[in-house]
Length: 387
Image 1 (cartoon, rainbow, N blue to C red):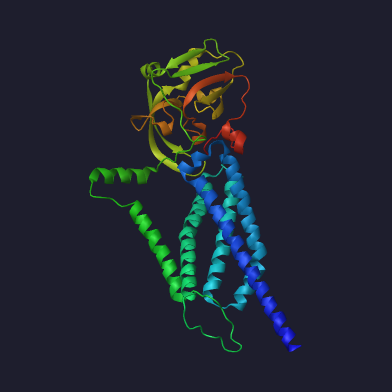
Image 2: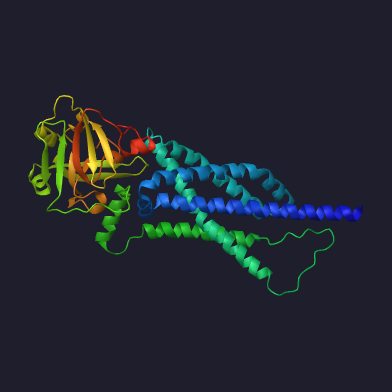
């Protein structure tokens, strides 16, 4: 009977060990999937590579995140039980850290998923929290794997194995207090060093002043729904204005440059939370273009088309007749570059950036409004006014 009890206990221990192994494995797989999909959504070059499937990719990232949170909730009883049986403070710390990260990702992710654009500062806060937690966990994972691998290699080296005394539990491979302090000390130094490197100012006064301006103003994060930008041929490019108008017209790039130019300095706000202050825009008045084609009765809405053949935006005609709404061809005193929508993009200072459509090549006056690209794909606000 005593022997049977020992066998049962041994089998139960093996089953628990296997269960903990698979819990650890599933946790690692879900976390890596979140980091990979998150990187594609965060890094501009990777995000533009997704093209039209970006919104499906974002949806998949959200579903994985929900699955990760549910997994943490389901595994919590086993984690607590394991921590009680293995009273090493390092394991308890790691478990608490992962639960905290999961809660932080879930709360911030839900707000970003809902995509409420009414409170820009709140959205920006949650975006920073989500990004900060994701960046923090990367060196933690790499260090965690590295230390585990080093310990494992060390443990399988030929050496005299210590036999546990009777009644002593074999705790397996453990991280020492020194290992954990080294790990998180390294993470802290990496974060500090990264921040210092980012804002490091060399001796060049010109570079230093430029960097100071960027730090003060912010910087543009380039978004595109395609992986390649439209090609601008200055000699053949034309802006077409048609639809419910008396005089459908086309304007060459040179004709637009010859028209009266308007310059405005205004802040640029993206609905995802970042802003660039005091941006200098130069271009032609949308109102003057509209007046030349003479909209017909019933033409109360406008749809603009991007040369990428995917992106469109819609507006009330009256929204574009404001004096400071322009079709910009210069940014900060220089012609628009390819990533910023060359040769022409709309700029409406009262609306979020997604309404300032890039690579504009056609303007259509319409009787019915319809939805723009992001309004249709992800339910963005139709007017996109800053609040």
